[in-house]
Length: 300
Ligand code: HMG
Ligand code: MG
Image 1: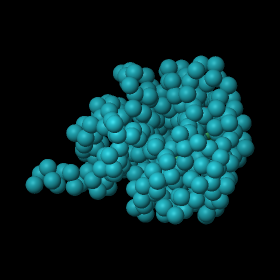
Image 2: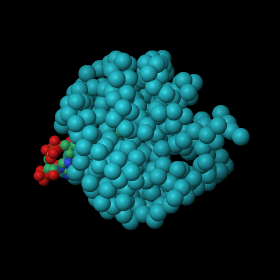
Image 3: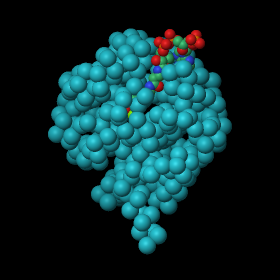
Image 4: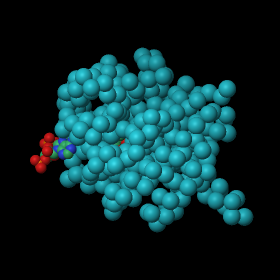
């Protein structure tokens, strides 16, 4: 049997949070319904953050409530503080994600507090999450470069990641937020983290600004990482990281993994339907090389 690599689909959150014109709740829901047909086992539905800060993610709790339940899919919501967590809890969300960074400046711009203060907020979330048996995933942004501070020391990434695990996160996703990293630098980050943490508790989250995401994922696979975040049709960016492009596309990640004989549980036809539908809704070209090659071949 082939080894399984888990894909966490973050398009409905990391992708759509950056759209200039927010999608309607109905279009966000349709995207998730399409993604539910693909065999993905983890979908980030949206974020319970301030709508003044990120209007694109408004009513994510309502969106969550409107989804049909599926025991094979974990639907999660991003929650920066107890207020966000309580919104997620109220709609029966079983998994949330907390997010901080390895850069003080980015944390300040993103969630208006220091790294230490972010952990104080997460402590409140953790206590309530434990009481309700809710899984908490952690994110660390700026694992290689920060848009405000430049290069980030791998030891800093390891330190913040370890703190999230110690606090009770079941997994920490390392975010290469601005997509400037190359595999040599990514290797150093994993080496620093894996000196202290188990690969099974870590995930990779790569943005593709300079076209390096797949190379960085290959490097991460070599280091033993087996969970990766991606966005359908390469949607996204971060509102607090100017110039950063979308995540690696789920289509390109699927192509890499399936051709390396990893099992992903993904149904290709359903993935391509989801990809085509959201590309049409947004009326833009899909940046995924694989999706484009797939349709060219199909139409030839
Ligand atoms: P703040 O202004 O410091 O918050 O923002 P506050 O506690 O002072 O409250 C100010 C107002 O916000 C109040 O409302 C609160 O009720 C409200 P008002 O009295 O003015 O009407 N508020 C909230 N409303 C809804 N949900 C909440 C919430 N909390 C307070 N949870 C805050 C702090 C965290 C809220 C703000 O900075 C924020 O919402 N930031 C959004 C950050 C964000 O979503 N960033 C993008 C996601 S991270 C990312 O993309 C990186 C990642 O993909 C990995 C990678 O690529 O690196 C994960
Ligand atoms: Mg991201």
